[in-house]
Length: 451
Image 1: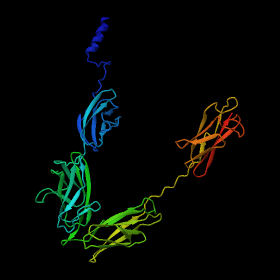
Image 2: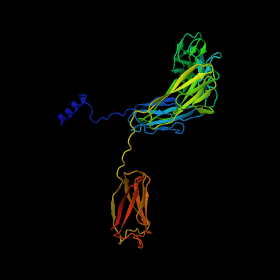
Image 3: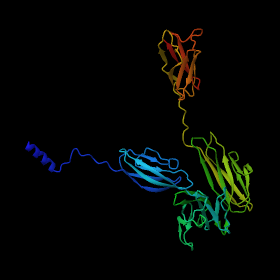
Image 4: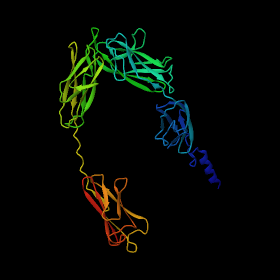
């Protein structure tokens, strides 16, 4: 006995791992513990430790809805619109019922106005943006880009950082008073009126083209994109130009051309302009109040629209558009249409219309299959053919119904059934057919027999 105790004592003193010890459960840790979110702007809470699967609950699901079951270890939050700050508590729970909370403050997102480009007053190319026309500046010129930030209560938001980015085009932002430091990104602070203003400068000696600009409120992440046009300038005059110079619409299937519509903007030269298409069979030009193969655009930065009709059999074609100002200057644009490259898929041949089971037998009670009270039903499955199906029964007193899934036929009868005609009920030894008719005119039936 002493030797056994000594052996046990020796094993314990050797530092061996206790086979009966349990592994501690990792604590549930979530970060951040507090955060601010803005309406409509996604934010993420990360689960750093714990035992999955995890669940999350919101104290105010109207303001901050969440998906209860967490996929992975990231919880994406998107708050709904609020007019004032709202405090919401998120509770995260793991598989061991450990729980931790996250304090969330939902803040109203700012209202970003339209990105406005304002050319200098003396610009020969200048056209201030409207709801239907983009602004325009000359190559090498400067202009201002501005955007107004307001709160949910429509009051201006001063001292908010707004970042402007060049999304596309040959221009930069001016960062210094001397106009020598240029960059593709500029961050400015809104003034007391909630207005963020930055100077843009177009590159020199560039062809006329449309460019893209973006403004982002750095606090909430909300952003607005805008566009303006840079016009080629030669010898101090805006060169007659059109944007775009080429528009292309491409189809999907071989030998088929889609319909489409494109807007063109004319700049420079001396308005009004006469616009004519060289392919009257395919093209239609239009301006407000007029359409045809020739239209008049009355002012610089005016728009005309070109459109074509779809064709099931066509080849690629380029429709030339000629623009002439009153001084006789002429430029051309094009409207190109191309058929697709894919073979149009052949509609699959429908499967044979079938009903399953094709026959069914039910046992009579006291010589009849008529229910003692109420209604009795059987069901068949309908497949193939060309949906939608129509269903019926071969005898009066039986009702065939197609259920909501569109493929289950239910045949029902009640104590009022009279089959065969002149008799009472549904007697043993008789049959009735459930009939299905598909949209292509195919017919199939199943037989129900009372035995």
